[in-house]
Image 1 (cartoon, rainbow, N blue to C red):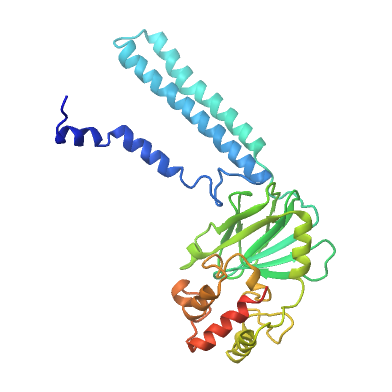
Image 2 (cartoon, rainbow, N blue to C red; image 1 turned 180 degrees about the vertical axis):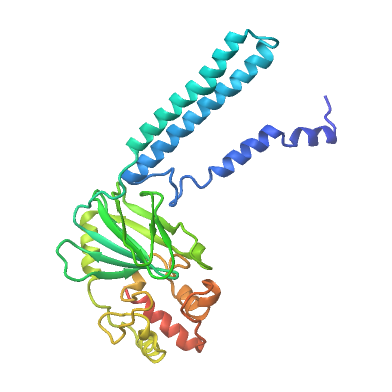
Length: 338
């Protein structure tokens, strides 16, 4: 049998069912990525994911029951109905059943949800939401002073860590979907959330409260490590910055000093002791630059320095107009701060 061109076109044309399937698949594309509540990697996130799936299943069952009742009354048994029978259906299916099911789900859900303020196992991390970056301070058990970092959070796997939260100017919200729930951050007030990661890996955290022009670019990497690796990293993080290893990096350190970068940034072991911007002592070893905006490469460091205000609107750091050679040397210096 010969098939004409119009018939082939008609056969290939997507139907409503095909469009629905495509839309469903498009909503599931991001469910397995590093910022997904449906891909839990911590105790608290696992409880939240379980709650979601059970609630979804309950919603599907209720939908089927309600629509099944409509179908039965309109197609299987249309026409008049005994008044007593109709009253039983309305009271039982419209009042008693929803109250019992929803109340049961509510009680079970509240009992399942983890307490976000559980005490930790010793390590305390203090995170301050700035505009628009994250100041991170690690307080090991018994420490007299914090180990300061910025724009990433590192945690040991298999341990519960307390994270104390505050903000500088506006309200933020701390959220690592793969590890736990959200907690708001307020200027002049401290809140607390604790996380217990169960898988090693790198996950994406995000500010979940609109905080200004660069809210969408206020992210951070949450790196979960084996306890021994975390202890080694924390010990290295507490040390001073490594001296420049090459002539270009040494010229970059001079540019850093001459441009007054130390008035805003700290590089431990040098004269740079600024507290306005992120601590740069080990910036070259971090997962991202500019609170998730760029990667930590020489090219991205150069782009950040020269186009800061374009990459992150209303950021407090100005863009610098440096000669190409000076910009390259400065990027080499910062890249080497591991």
